[in-house]
Amino acid sequence: MNTKMLCMSAIALSLTAGAAMAGTAKGTSALDDPQKMAPFFTDAGMKTMRSGDEFKKAWMAMTEEDRASIKKDCGDETIAKEHDDFCKMTKELGGAN
Image (cartoon, rainbow, N blue to C red; front, side, top):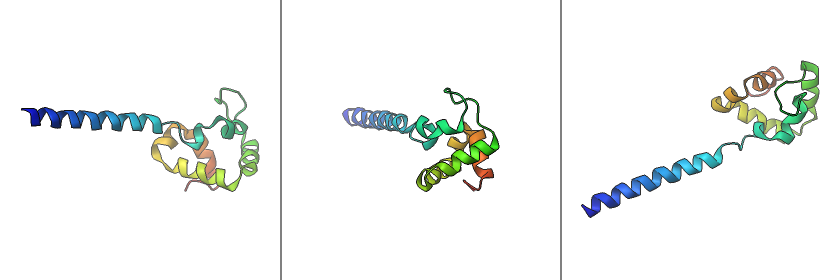
């Protein structure tokens, strides 16, 4: 009986630790960085995206490293779904194939 309790405790602990780690990983996307994303939006709440030309200008003003990070994030289905319109615009500019 003690062995069974020990095994169940170990499983519960591993599930809890896994969920905790997954929770801390959320929000690490470049698309969740307000400083990087602000140039692409007209409002502080980042709800209204800039027009195509303004968006392209902001995209080209970024470093290649930042653009690569965003392309990578837009390539992830879960992240891309959360930032659908933004990722569509980056794909139009040749990013996140």
